[in-house]
Length: 279
Ligand SMILES: NC(=O)c1ccc[n+]([C@@H]2O[C@H](COP(=O)([O-])OP(=O)(O)OC[C@H]3O[C@@H](n4cnc5c(N)ncnc54)[C@H](O)[C@@H]3O)[C@@H](O)[C@H]2O)c1
Image (cartoon, rainbow, N blue to C red; front, side, top):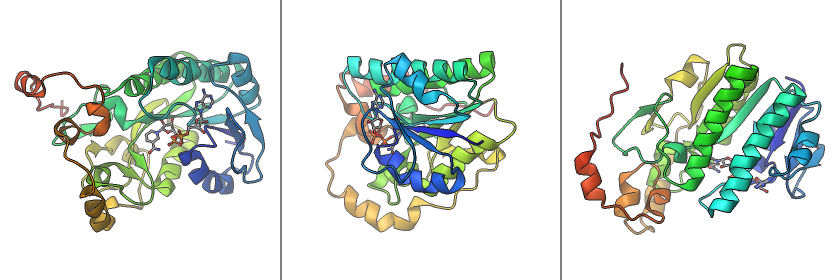
């Protein structure tokens, strides 16, 4: 994998992993819709994801793409539609036209945020989005499957938990993803010869993970970090937060309770919440 394009390079995750990626892929190219705080001495291609011609120009002569660009929290429909749905389509279509071989898609735990915290879900768990943002990530995973099966691009969707070096609260003990572990997952997606279309959980080797990441492990993922080592920090931060019945029940946390109007007790009664993924 020679020329790798990183979209959303100016964002929180992009800025964290650019120096790590640069050491592995010296021909790394950065892209974002606005100039970057720091290009780390790398070439930069400005591109607005909802504008197909500008995405096509950014993707020209690229071998592999790490697609982080997009709106990264819950937001108004128009914003999600343009950045994450139209933008994601433009990215995959431009990649097909340019002959790109591999794409890493930054999906999210919010594509499956309405699973209960007692559940352990594998990569095969169907999406259960907790927000318009989560729906856009489920769309991206589906689009990735289409371009993998129909056009032969090797696609890896990472259902990312929370990227950082410390768990920001008790929920993040289950879903934290250390940047070094993220880079390991990205390398598998870009380089492993057997990738067709994969969904991996973007989490470190967390003791209290809600996700069964066997699929990633089969491809050689060996996370080096575990959020549990910073349990005291997470518990101290948790004490600063107010309880929230909906957020505290589901894996997606606060995204689940945004605009929530259902009667949760009735839903819990009706649902068979013991999901069996064993068969
Ligand atoms: N940070 C996390 O822990 C986390 C968790 C789950 C998923 N993700 C996903 O990973 C990716 C990176 O996350 P982040 O925290 O760095 O987000 P961020 O919001 O900090 O960065 C996103 C970047 O995308 C760019 N962008 C937004 N809209 C764009 C558009 N229309 N055209 C071109 N560029 C656009 C922004 O300028 C920004 O630099 C996102 O796709 C996010 O949904 C992140």
